[in-house]
Image 1 (cartoon, rainbow, N blue to C red):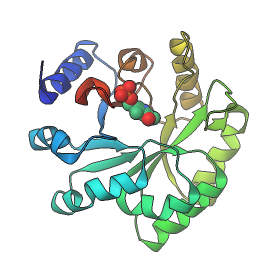
Image 2 (tube, protein in one colour):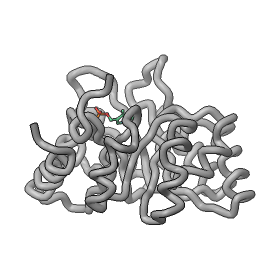
Image 3 (cartoon, rainbow, N blue to C red):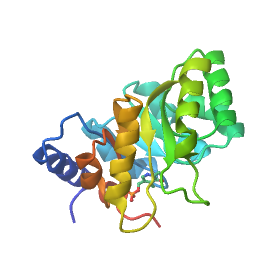
Amino acid sequence: MSTIVERFNKIKSNINASKPEKNVNIIAVSKTFPLNHIQPLIDYGHNHYGENKVQEAFNKWSDIKKENSKIKLHMIGKLQSNKAKSAVEVFDYIHSLDNQKLADVLAKSQNNLNKSLKYFIQVNIGNELQKSGIPVNELDAFYSYCTQEINLKILGLMVIPPNNSHTKKYFKSVNELNASLELDDLSMGMSADYMDAINYGATFIRVGSLIFGSRS
Ligand SMILES: *Cc1c(COP(=O)(O)O)cnc(C)c1O
């Protein structure tokens, strides 16, 4: 069995071998894992981690972030607006910006705390009823609102494609939407499909189980 650092480096070398046009950032998705399991990768010097629950992120990362300002935390899970204020305190990036009410609370909270987070707008590319994300036909208006009315720093789009065999098609569509908004970054790709995502221009991939092992 290989170690966490070896598995992480294997992903890095796979990425480098594909010679991506842009720099690809690996977000090591550490949700559900305790800090002692994650520590080898922190000690190795990796700085980007992903969590999907505000409280869990707080408990796990508050102290370590005070000691190490290089650590950047990414919120990748559904964010309720009543947790937005706490999210702004602990996270550096939010990948799940998906409605106006949430955007308003985030903008107000970061102004109050004198912070400026980086955001991805989550897109519901498959128009799935049960999935969060901005519908494609509302994306332009929502993007304008976030950037022009409330001054959120939007890096790009984020997608969790439908769970079927058409992942590449969805990656391609999101890449085109991202380009139409002239955005530089794109958050897509997980353990099973990160290489496909990179082929379609992902600059932030969110990889959990392939690094840390399966979650119970
Ligand atoms: C859990 C999660 C991941 C990581 O999934 P793996 O398959 O373990 O790599 C990526 N993105 C989101 C939004 C997640 O919730």
